[in-house]
Amino acid sequence: MIRINLLGKVKVKAARPKSVRAASNQALQSVMAISVLVISIGIIYFWEKILSQQDADLSRQIALARKEKIRQESLLKENEIFEKRRKLLETRIGVIESLKKNQSGPVQILDILGDCVQRTDGLWLKDFVQKDNVITLSGMAMGSPDVIADFLTNLEHLGKFKNVTLINIQEVEAKYSFSITFEGNMVPHSKEVS
Image (cartoon, rainbow, N blue to C red):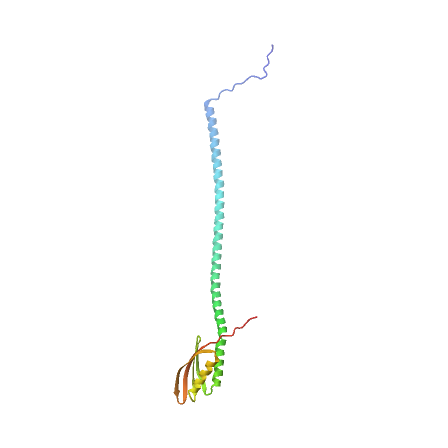
């Protein structure tokens, strides 16, 4: 019978010597070490790029924040100047309004005093001083002290003045010098704006 070997001869590989195996292991280890080194350098390079980009971004943000701080400080200074001007203007407006409010009071008082003096013959006023609500008058009267008494009575009957008081009276060559104090009860007219 004929034998046919379909598998062919099995070749047995010759065993490599240990030096060849060691050399190939060293080469493989060298390739692996170089690969790890290259990959590590690549990772470090990309990590450094990312960190430098973040550093640049943070530097830009810090620069923008400093510019914004300077801008806001200038706005704050402008606001302080504006507030000082506003307070000054409010003070001025308050003074103007109080002057407008109080300007009619002395006019009314002088008008009333003028009427009282006209109704009293032989009397004239020399001095008029108003401090707050207290008014001091000084004047001269001809004839007798009754002229001064009539003037005081006229002032009291008006109802516009309180505490009408004769401070002093002096006779000088048939004339009588006098001083009077009283409280003015004048309320300024309020103007309605429509």
